[in-house]
Length: 101
Image 1: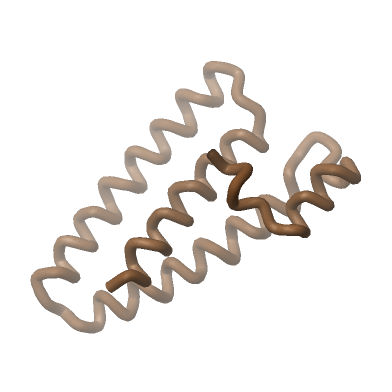
Image 2: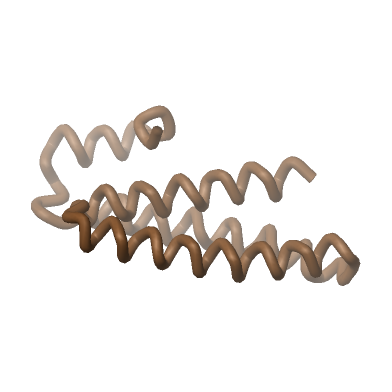
């Protein structure tokens, strides 16, 4: 669940109601966190081995799945905060997996 990954700044944004209908802070954090994953993936691709080829395939599959998941959640009535939170979970899992190697 996303709650266990909330930083102090996330809690402040939620408790103060600073997002006012759209989770601006969570969106900015998603951009920063995704940038870190891009950096990790570029390092993996620079190795140009079998593992980097698997990572490229996995990346494309994950992006397609995440887009369909977000669309389905939106059509089901999910809030922007919930959709962004789910994307942040995917990004956090990728960061953890890529930095463990």
